[in-house]
Length: 206
Ligand SMILES: N[C@@H](CCC(=O)N[C@@H](CS)C(=O)NCC(=O)O)C(=O)O
Image 1 (cartoon, rainbow, N blue to C red):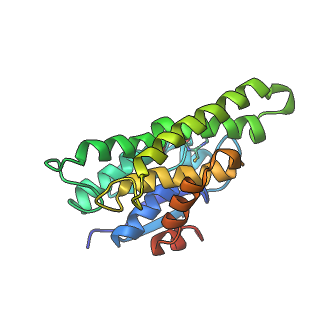
Image 2: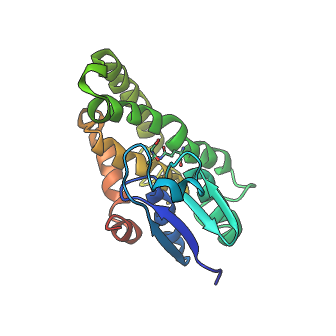
């Protein structure tokens, strides 16, 4: 067993992706719980770990890194090769990488826009036009996910993978953003399949 990885964590933040992955893989980890200081998560001590005070980050021995999806790739490559991801010679490898990154690169920015519009910006800086744009965009990007899901349980036909963790976290974000109108029955079914997993049950309480 490797030494435990330290995960810098705030509930409901992207550190859930990392913890969910570690739970699915049964790898040891320790949590460093950050203090919620708006605009400066974790305070000055955490700036030494992540210069922008964004969550998550991990420490593995002397190595410190951030970016949730990159952390997932690091953990899988180093400690669980061949698990929760197709191998490079598999026909699903390209689509797997695409959907793994779709979570953070395509889904998350649209949902984050909604969250800022609806909850974080002061009233006078909110824009109905931006919110409307984000709603349309989210419907579009979730529509593409719905097409990919088809009638299988997970993003890849071969079954659950780290891509589902990356995207699944965004479905939590979408709920927090109150994007209920964009969550279709099919996306809701997918969410329920994901949140039925033991690892999710554990992580959702952290
Ligand atoms: N692309 C980064 C995004 C990190 C990020 O923005 N995390 C949020 C919490 S979920 C955060 O720290 N927000 C505070 C900020 O942006 O100052 C990742 O995937 O790790």
